[in-house]
Image 1: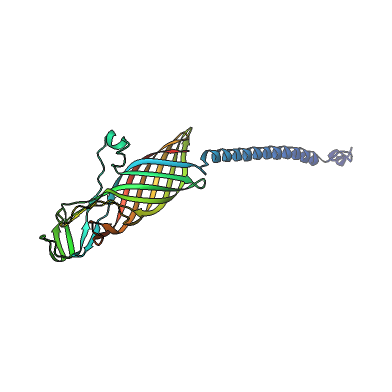
Image 2: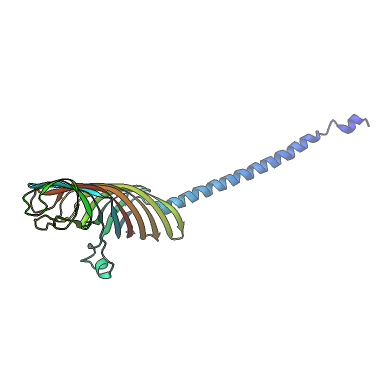
Length: 298
């Protein structure tokens, strides 16, 4: 038999065709396995997304909460005007006045509005965004023992304060001005917040949220000015706006506790100081809040 006949028989397929057939079968098997793997992974991802959406879906959810705050304020110029006076005390320092904790003051139904509190009710308009209305009840107390600069004039007050002032430094005493928004510095506001789930384990989850708010100021100002009688009435005095960030720990479907940090700006051009409508004060300042609130969602 010739060498050529040994190498290749006319009736025998070349050896590389067998290899190609073998490789083709392996390739088909691999491609099928890979396709099945992709299909499995894709289905798992879809199921996981659906489960996540079911867990995180908040659209249509209603929430409400109640809690308490500590507040801080920037210095402020307070302008006071009336028929016989027009003066400004500059860079006045003020602080909050949180009620000492007791079950009676904080949980008695007739006394729960005495401490500095935060109350809010809201609705999720989508999975991540909510709109709410709330009341931030702060207290603002001008320190009575402090040095301030005074500009303007006072006359016919029958006090030692009658005169013209051009930036003099004086002691801010209570017989000149006692000035407190202690019944409170009430910020009635609307907020838009975005909320995202940060962590979840079983029925406990942690949400992070941030938002913006604006609203009106309705203080009940406790003021005693010169020889005038003490005045203490609610009055629409101005407006405010704010930004807030919160971390909310959820327990099951209904209960949560949230820690909030809020900062904003308040402008009150029409503060009542006496029983006479022509007497008024104006001021603006920045504020900050640290809040702890407890709530329900359903």
